Image (cartoon, rainbow, N blue to C red; front, side, top):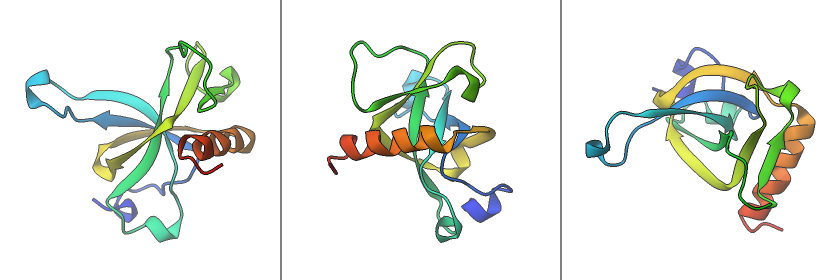
Length: 122
């Protein structure tokens, strides 16, 4: 499936529930996690994959400039959530399950800074 066939445009900063397929089929079923879309717009309409960063409710063991705290009022979880910008994932568009919510421009600005650090662009 291509982005244009998804039925909803992919917009940078939107959060989706994503199904991750196991790398090793012997490990069992897929898992679902929330992820922030990093690519959006008409340029990517014909793409079959998209780059994302994962969200986690597990607090970082140590403070890293690549972990971004998402304010509680900005997401649907009842606990703090972090965007883990130290690793960017490329996933098939087919693995997007449902749209959840949009991050604010302020939070996406902090994600952009963390991504630049994580990718060594600073």
